[in-house]
Image 1: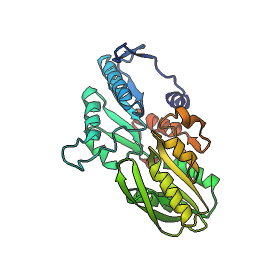
Image 2 (image 1 turned 120 degrees about the vertical axis):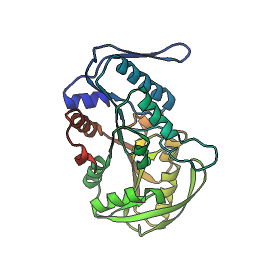
Image 3 (image 1 turned 30 degrees about the horizontal axis):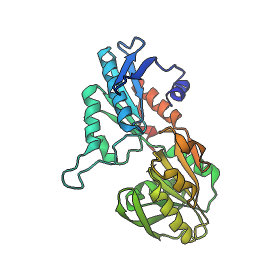
Length: 298
């Protein structure tokens, strides 16, 4: 992604050495002069989350000690975002902990995409530019699907996001009522809305173990949907996700390159990747030139 962003901006990716000691400790060395420069560090905090998180904060510390003028963390996928509130006794708000880490090491601005919860922006005491992959995904839907599309939220929490897509596509809206019995496991119950004979598109911010999407697809087919597709910004795809996708009623799963595909996901013919590098590059260019970024907040 960093190389695609650099290509769009007509610059080169800066040189840095990153390696691990035999005990797992991370070492970073910046290989060029950054004194007085505006630095953008591109790093999605995806699997392995803790390694990528430490790489980011250690690199930011190296840049700050090398006298960089301003350091912006470009985090297409914000790890720990699902732990954004205290919903049980004696549990952490890990999304806030990550924000504190960023600020403590010297990050002075954050550029991210499709946060799991928008209020995470409030965990920072520095500017946060929150982009959405909606323009890229909307373009794909308009180019590949007809007028019989209905947008479907896989749960009550995603209704606002799905409604925004339905409004821009001038399509119908449906909601899947589900019950989650255990973490990463859910049982789709019934559909609120008429999906009979229509192409249903499930919308979510991320796909992790794919349990929600696959159960939702099955429920939609049982309720008369002609076919089911899914669109998610972040392809976490952990655990049994790929096996579930292959055996599911989903025709396709459209994701962005906010997280690089790995392992079996690379060979899954149901997954289609859309690039958001140009969108991030435009935001970086505007931030560097002190221009407005608000037109990118679709």
